[in-house]
Amino acid sequence: MAQEKGLDLIEVADKARPPVCRIMDFGKYQYQQEKKAKQSKGKKTEIKGIRISLGIAKNDLELRARQTEKFLSQGHKVKIEIILRGREKAHSNLAREKMEIFRQMIPLETVIEQGPTKYPRGLIMMISKPAEKISGKIQS
Image 1: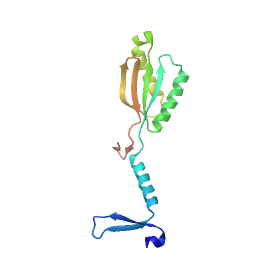
Image 2 (image 1 turned 60 degrees about the vertical axis):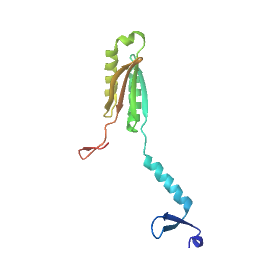
Image 3 (image 1 turned 135 degrees about the horizontal axis):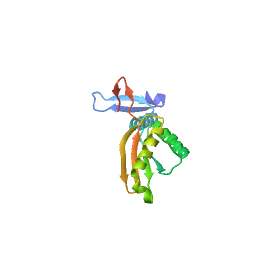
Image 4 (image 1 turned 30 degrees about the horizontal axis):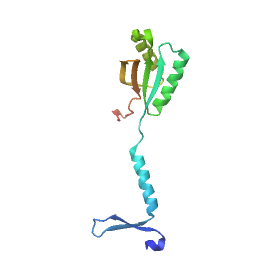
């Protein structure tokens, strides 16, 4: 029957008695299985980086806030870095304030994954979009 239709005879379950076979195009079957495997992997989130400095102009800060909004809406996490140079390192409290002002400029609701932490070149903060709420339950 398979040869008459120009298709392949594929054994689906060999341990069953009698063995279960199917008549189908094997190349198409393999393609569908690969496609299904790729979809099951799901979308991976990346960590995108935004760098700002202590003396950044307001319009540049707004531009970076729009870029951050774009990254968050795509489902990525965003690492915000404030680079401190020279004597700026003594004013880490100003850098924390600047970072909080920047976070408030982002129009989307954000969740702080990792608070402003000090590292040798300045401060780092990791933010992401909150998990979607469905009928009062949080989906993760």
